Image (cartoon, rainbow, N blue to C red; front, top):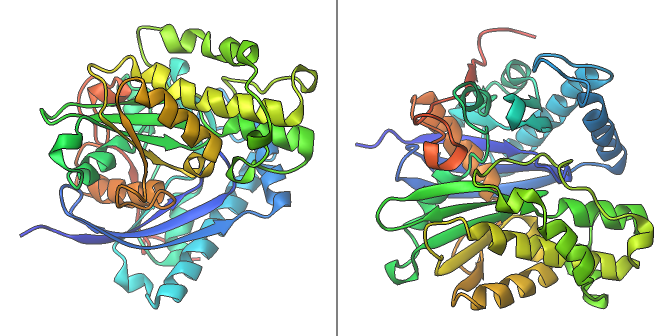
Length: 377
């Protein structure tokens, strides 16, 4: 009989817009029972502090260093995760005794795979003590120690979900459009390939914040009023990232937004939406065969211009593009669900990453377990 555990996943992504909380019952393998979901937005002042943390993190040379205000930010960020988890439990009528594990991503402030350096701030032991639930955290580091890129980690969860998609629609490619986009390719012969595919929302977010003073282009409304500047788009798509033989994971600083004088507001947003879509299809060119179905997850699926461009570009290869919801999933909850799933796998010593995904030398377990009862406040 399957050893099914109840886990909460906590995810704060590269878009830095808030904390996603998702409940999952799973054996860490084929059994997946999706539960409730909650999104807790960060207030603007805290988002500004997180942006400063990214600047402070550039000085890190060893992953345990916390220069500038990073140490205080780590505590503040963890406390917000505590509050989000407790709010979720209360809303769902649950107690800490009803949950076996929390999967805690933390906030990535630095990711330099070429230097085997990745830093996610977040105090796992503090979260465990404050919530009364065991916490699995720091799930990327062991992969890097063994030659992997440390990202993406979600593909093993995509694999568990993909069996709900009819056989005639395979090969399937799950695409998560967060700040950075990543894709997971799945074929019926057991092939699993995953890698970062390019900038997702991060360039658009930075562009509209700098030029319109708002944090993101809601639904692609600004982009819908503009036109694609192909010259500007091709500059991004000519990056060596897309043509290199080896796939590599991205930091949000690897691509920079245009200068304000390079485009009018709506044209810039429209161009960057096109770049987000075209980057996915360009990166998919490295896959062993063309997907028949693209399942789009993450915040980028709500940008109608990205989705329109994706549908148009995918049609050239006779592929279909579906939102996560159209495929029967929850595109907002999926990454947080994945972190719950990964926590259960980690607690059982099952691999989180694989050679075809991160480039690690062999299937690799990971994560650190913080026991809720080890310490007291």
